[in-house]
Length: 271
Image 1: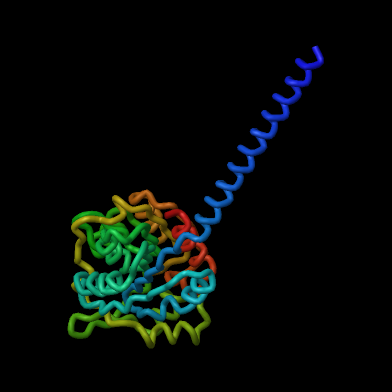
Image 2 (image 1 turned 90 degrees about the vertical axis):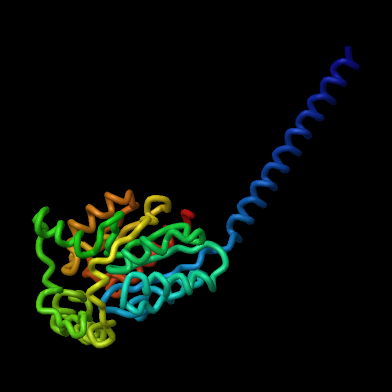
């Protein structure tokens, strides 16, 4: 009888030791997995500016992303045609190894919708941007939005200057409607550095929208006077994007860079 009790106690002790060993082994593997995940290479963030702008549009977002350990490249679009802008983005892609989060503001929504089909691109982020479908253009979307759906008009584009087919916004339009939530002195700098935007870009269409196969994120500017916020809402819904609202003008990346950075980082962390 005593031997039977002794052997049962030995058996229980062995089973407890085995369970402890399994638990330790599992925790070690789990910790290793977590460690490996945290050390996974971060995607490169490629920022694409819109019309009437240049790469300095991202001057406030870039250091915030770099501070979090991201490699960031801001494309300098020629704004001469959709084809030329897409080519500029692809030249940047060629220099990058690993995954990319592609971010576009305004007109650049059309650019990233086309360029985003590259295999390196893992997510698209639209910042108050045109999210077009096949055979849609920035102009056709705008015409449909304002004439058919009766969205409020966009006053920023009134009384624009056109020279040799290139469009430029007047300084007062930038200060009052394009970047109205920036200090006036800063808005005037935005007006001074704006890129000349060729009118042919307005009718350019994409052949294969990248948002149909890539996860998308959309930041709506609720006080936008370039693209109607209602139109932005509908575009975000159309592409199935994870959507965010910012109480900002068209240039939210300048007036609310911290919030825009959070959205980009959220996209980067989900790929």
